[in-house]
Length: 165
Ligand code: FEO
Image (cartoon, rainbow, N blue to C red):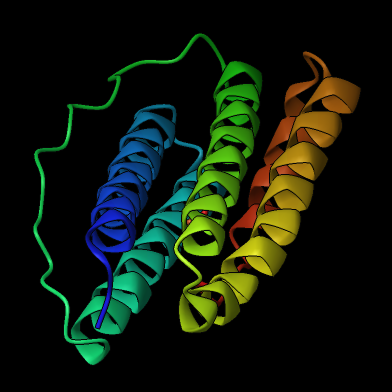
């Protein structure tokens, strides 16, 4: 059984993961509008990955005999100034998610919920990867600058992503 504070905190995180999925899908739509199909594909995969994070927590709440309570999700932005600005927003967003997972872990510690602490280990490790990936995209786009040949080459590279993990 989950304690009320842990259940509430996980339900809040489910909402945050779904919000991330929505945000990255909005970014995918923005990239489609620029005909950057590789970026759009990468962001779509990222959106699917976030959905899988939400479902991992969804299943966990149910496995522990808790109750999933879904919450309203704010509309994501429609436009971004540039692919670089979009990538910077992705990185800032992932840093915020890391802080949320840390706060959730803190609740599990306070509640002496050891099983939740173990479950959250996966998310802590995942956030290292998420920040690294976003940071690499920011750095590549900074290097490319305004060169469209470089941007198109990077677009092709991102289009090769074949897993939502
Ligand atoms: Fe669910 Fe991008 O972290």
